[in-house]
Image (cartoon, rainbow, N blue to C red):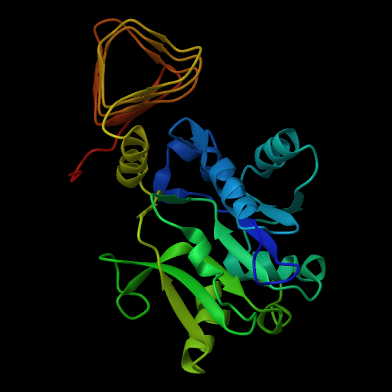
Length: 278
């Protein structure tokens, strides 16, 4: 697509440890956890590609070898991987580590763990002159910026990025709040659904939303038990009953099991996720 910002590049942040999503993230980095049978990282990469970024980078730290291998396999080396070998640097440090790669360009920064559906992210670019900081926001959640909750995507001018270092820090303190105090920050409302997938409850909620009220069963799944409002991954074997749950690729629900409001990984891990779920 055409966009009004010349040479826009993009960074997908995928380095976090996903501590709130444990024990699932003891097996996979959060960025590779599937939503609607698609890894969150793949959803984010498709999002920034649709916004017309000229080049894309992904940062990786926790279980970073898995992230790097996934990116190389899916993009055939077209996406640059920034490996934070000493551990996650935070959102600001991750962007700062890529400062030379950015090299004077404006940057679209996207959180890999943001689930966005049903709205237009392209509104974020409309009319942007490359000078102010822009955030995508939604109403009805935490009021972080006026009435808006940050929805996982931001636009950063080079004049802010060039000041960043690779010391551990967050963009909210190094860029967003300083820009807000200087009158240089704006929020573009996202009219669709945004879910921060950081907890088991919200991770399940994103999957059920992706299923659209029904069930998503991947090709190659072997399902003979009754399923309702579920997401079943490729290679999963389901012999028991599954309701409002996620069964990861290759996972097993044995005969006689009843899985409700949970996430199943492998043969031995079940994470209850539906507490407080509407």
